[in-house]
Length: 309
Image (cartoon, rainbow, N blue to C red; front, side, top):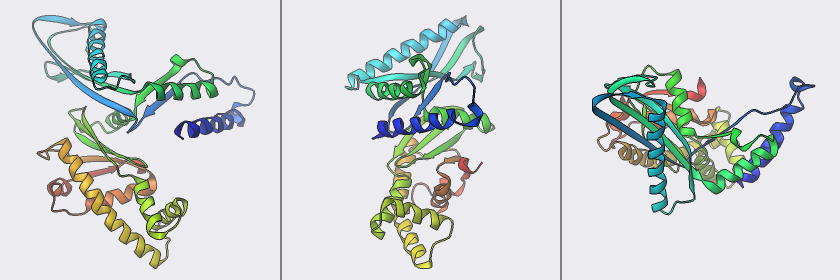
């Protein structure tokens, strides 16, 4: 279904662009296509490589490339042992570097005895990668090597770090239709990612079930509720559904934060990335006082809604 939808959307998008006045009588050619995978489509790893030598050494590009290659081979072997041999590494990026414990943006050609590299790697199903690539090539006619594939957590982290980089420690809550990812960033590095099965469609499905209406009508009902345009009776029923859903969400949220940090030592800053019509709802969920393990964390939260900026 996802492949069919992607095929249809690309066909429509390309046709719409090429037939617009902006491209009339111009050379119509794509140079690159960037694909970003979200949960649950990918496997994610962050590796901290710490090197300490008695004799100073020069950090060359080849030196770094060799380290990255070795780590990718280790990940491939790990995936193979876990019977996930169908997974293929699509991303291997050094996201942060330090010399003598201090952040240095470009370590190439630097001389040191101590080096820290933070490597991000992600892998996706080889079959899914091939199918997506074939659909893109079908509609854009670009060579396969011009299709760049990344993980959405890294894209999201990089964007927030570059625009809100004054704080090196923060959480990102990425809420999509079915899944919520919580990304823990510690000292400018993704330390861990945990997910739980709760998204916008979780709410829409429950409204559809309780109101005995279609998903389309339930989604419209939720949208109208968020904009305060529903009748009192419908509003009261929706509020009751949301109260029950918040209890379910709170359990998932607590368990996920404990998985990220059992001691609940977490940053105060949290960025919420969600659809515009539901982001405020999850901010409300966050602001509710709880007597669970998240109590202290919730009291000190500094929430930023990315969808509203």
